[in-house]
Length: 256
Length: 275
Image (cartoon, rainbow over all chains, first blue to last red):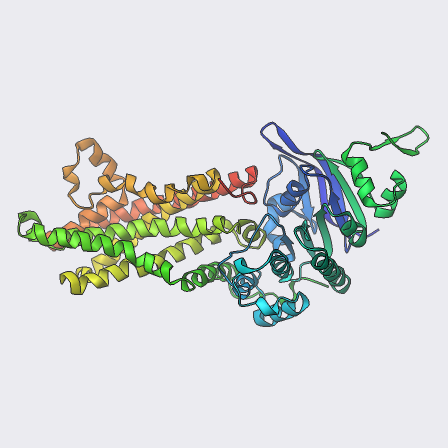
């Protein structure tokens, strides 16, 4: 069993009377790619935000690389990075300027060389000198991924990494993430709505619904457990609350 | 293994991150001529307006005639206070407008370092804006605020620190209440203008308002400015009052910014920036 990079224990997040995340606990194994799945409002982005320290949980604890994120997050932040469609980069700055600023924030030594390497890997070289705001959605996603890779993070938290991408670009990004993980051994935790992405990239899947963790397993385990052909059907089972009940003889059945 | 192999461990990481953010806003500033022009535009318009009023009053007011630069100095020094506050608030709101706060605060950047970068950019913007207007006043009205000498530096430092303090408070307020509160950046400072004695002595105010003026660093600065221009005396006591108050103001400014930042982390406002 691989050691845990992320350890979440009984976290909850309440916004006044709304419970966005309700007593969720899970670990993320070293060098795994783990998916946080769930419909809109399931609590994926809220959970990721709490892991990153952008949002303080109402209760519970989070440790990353063995460090308490609620107390010492600055020890850990240089070792991780993230991307999200809900967070942008300054639009008037060129791609190169944006990457330079973030490279300095992360203390990268040879900034030009790092940007050149990433621009080759992510094929962003031809628009390095264009303002970020003038790029297409697909180009921007690649730039944000380049920003997320600047510090060669040991842990990447990706919120819907292929949202708003056309199938070709989305496939390219998935391939790039696979190759990056294989090459560096980084750990990835991603939130996604895209089930083919999850089947392709992830070793482990955490299913959320209405802020609660409702199931967990490898894609193969979940397919078997729910008796489905693909993760999309599993997702729909869970979203429509046709979730599992454990019978007295410990066999899982899907409750309609 | 991934990770820190390519990262700096030497040179003060904190200064490096502050510099990174200053660089980010310098990129923005230098990429836009209108932005630089706008920095100089308002201070210059104010200076020209009050310059002509001064020209008129010099021949119609014995008080102004004693020190013809008093109004122009007031205008320019007031703009130091206004521009320094606005500089902090606008540079911070630039991060909110560009929905960039999430990326910034997942990087190793500390809120205190963001605050320091805001103050640095505010200083740069104020020097460009008010400095430009002060230079234009020399050929236009044959008046150089620089003729005040070293006291000018003391006034400048005190006003800019007061502006920073209010700018930090306003930035925190906008972070807490969203961009719907951004007008605060433009109006907040004007609450202290009547009580600061920019264009008239503090003794003009009703007695109860003079007590309010006493706790504003700006009122001591403008009294000190008039002492230099009318009496040719540099009032160290006024400077010390202003400086001591500014220590409190700046500490309160940073404390409120950090408190609002913590509230934003509780309420999830670093990711969902908006009205």
